[in-house]
Length: 128
Image (cartoon, rainbow, N blue to C red):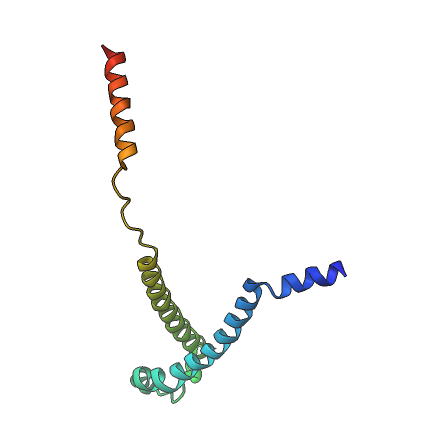
């Protein structure tokens, strides 16, 4: 029974479940980004360049027999994902910084002031 309890503790630990949710959301987000690149970015931004190269689809781009169109599409997708994640993390960090702001510590208490006075008097007495 010890093995099963240990496995249950590992499998249902918060970090493992959070990671699984992140992977699933990442896969869904990847589909959204792919659609954004293929259906919006490519037609709007790359069509003029594709027309100059006499190519109708980005996958058909080639140079000296090397097809680099799919690679270019993947690079564009990566840059969009990286930018969106950067903006999300930047927003989350700015929210967490506001939560973590600790007010400045209050001045010394009356007891601390009295102890500091005693300390200063002892120092002055020993230096004379």
